[in-house]
Structure formats: C-alpha cells, structure tokens
Length: 144
Image (cartoon, rainbow, N blue to C red; front, side, top):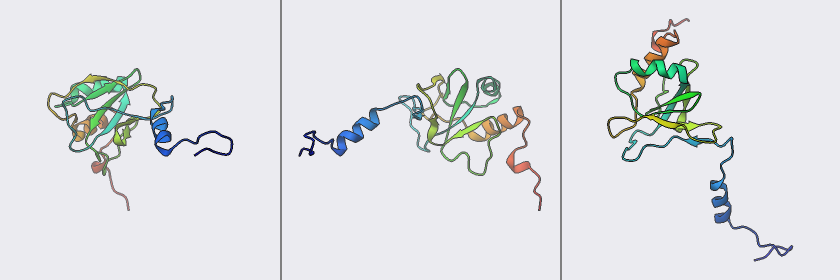
C-alpha cells in the first residue's frame, strides 16, 4: 500500500522497533541484574550522593549490588521497599530501578555474594536515617 504521495507508510512493527532503539540523553534506563543472579522480588533502587554512599557501605551487615557513577551510588532493593517508609533526603527511591536522565548506566561497584542482588532495605534505611540525622518513620511523634 502506498500513500497518495507515493511514499510507503511505516508499519506498526517498524515504528515500535525504531522507538525502542532510541536512547537520548533524557531516556530513563533500568539498572541491570548481573548475570547469574535472579530478582524474584522485583527490583527497585535507592540512590544516594556518592559521598554519603561511601559512609553507608561500612555500616551495613550485608550488601547487595551497588552501582555508582560520578555523583550517585545506587543500592538495589526488593520492589516496594518504599512501602510505609519515607526515605530520608537526599536519598531518592527509584521504582523499577530506573536511572532517570542518564546517557549511560552507572557501573557495578559491588556485587552481592549470593544469587540475589538485594541489599536488605531496613538496615539501609536505618543507616541513612542515622547519617542524615533523620528520625525513622515509625519513631516519629504522632500529632492529632
């Protein structure tokens, strides 16, 4: 089938393939699960500034996969690790382990010793609360 101008229109398959192949500077990208690992609980990520990440690492009893770029460290946690938690600033919670506005993915800084990529979220949350002088959500005073 040809359009009135004589140009053949693109099919839906072609348009989808072209769209998937595009990666611009603002295209969000997902942190990968390293080869040989599985993520049975899904993946989200917690991003912290690199300097804060360096302070968090030695405070954790167990560390999963951590990715890093020049400005941030990304900790892989199970999906929904933000349920009933307010991650303290400057931490950012990334549903689906999506790195926003990146031209390239952060590099794998630390690989989990096991077969799952997760850092336990509660110890990570508590370490971040301590370092940012933030009271954990469940310890805050409730006002009427």
